[in-house]
Length: 373
Ligand SMILES: Nc1ncnc2c1ncn2[C@@H]1O[C@H](COP(=O)(O)OP(=O)(O)O)[C@@H](O)[C@H]1O
Ligand SMILES: CC(=O)OP(=O)(O)O
Ligand SMILES: [Mg+2]
Image 1 (cartoon, rainbow, N blue to C red):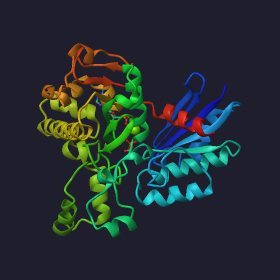
Image 2: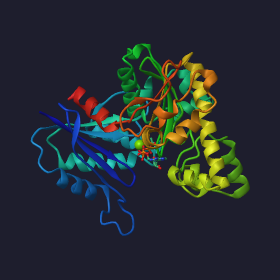
Image 3: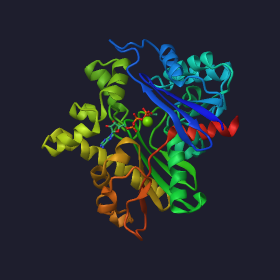
């Protein structure tokens, strides 16, 4: 028997799981929240990691530690054994993912210090999207500037998109190579990916996890000239604009509420701002479904995953209503079935198989770690 310890170190939290490779089940699982917030008894990630490791206790069969790292740039396209050099590269990439990479790095440093005798492996959100073509990842700006500052689309949530698209093929009993799939990862952060035969060909997030869908607090797609305008007309600084788009936009910006459950309740109770937010959220999702249907040259499966996608039948139905002309339809009874299992929610015989598949980034990380140690 052997186990992999998986760490997902976020800006204010550390999520962790000990995964037994034989059964692929988590034998220890936990979450430390509100690191560094006023009143929290955990001041930083090093301290948080001590608490996590104390809970983990002694594991004789630990073969490696896997770390989720959000930004791997163009440097990393697969699971990577972490040494001091890799740590430095992750640090250098923090400029492209200031909300995520510094926290990932703190987790790595604390865990390497505490568990120096096992290999530590980084699994990057960006890796799965490294297969995108230059046509899909190039922004049409000055090519020299783009090269020098590494400006291009990278895409994120790749570990989830990979896991979910593979599960879809397994569930349908279709070879992955034959399947054209759109994965809707709708969590607090949200992204859509077009997967052709197991390969990511396009994704909605960009150079950073800000582009694309309407998220809890992030704006998603916006005309970049809005930033110039707000700088000139409202005197907003770069820092203020960053804060505006990443932390005070999306559902929160439109309604004052960042959690989809609250927005939905408000909309049902007649709150007009909440209803508009749901319409914008839905409009953006459909924009990407249409775009990726075209890029894929047809569609076999459309999959919902992550917090909102897995749990909210009403929003799934709203997102897809009126797409019957594309072969995309939902069976209401199947959709509303309360189940935690991967399942089909389109009617039997529908041209596009619509599915709900719970994501499991930790298990996918453990598998990738095991593949290289
Ligand atoms: N039943 C539900 N209806 C709508 N939203 C939900 C529901 N359950 C969870 N969520 C939303 O899912 C989000 C968390 O999803 P998750 O995939 O865990 O995101 P993250 O990994 O980005 O934290 C929360 O913002 C929460 O509002
Ligand atoms: C990349 C990203 O947006 O991650 P999360 O959804 O965990 O914030
Ligand atoms: Mg997530």
